[in-house]
Image (cartoon, rainbow, N blue to C red; front, side, top):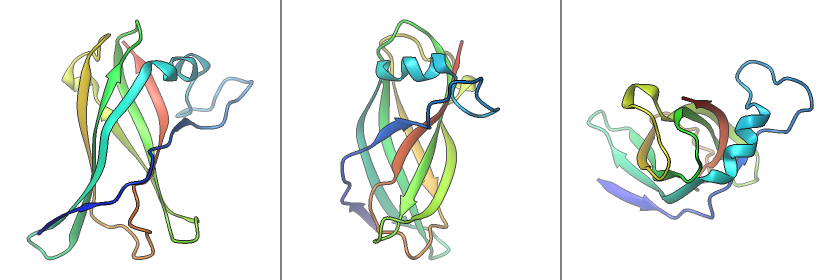
Length: 137
């Protein structure tokens, strides 16, 4: 069984700006400045039923590097909300991985983020995707 879920406008943000050196795991000022060069497209939700009977929800999409810097990895926070706008899950996942080679200028890569244990209170909407980390090559 497969279902496409309605998805609101995708929000792509960086975590709060900081004036000091960011703590480990936070985006650097350099990464924040580069964000304007990354473009998400074709982002959608897909739900399927696994053999075990539980639902697997996937966020599928594509990301393009329109900047001049090669990238080794990009991680995002996927933030799921309930019907009242409260966060019910915040999970960090990689959408570009170093093992796949450099993500160079003008290239587009597909990504797939799978979730098999979303809270029942989730509002069934596309999660907010927030860039958590960019590692340049």
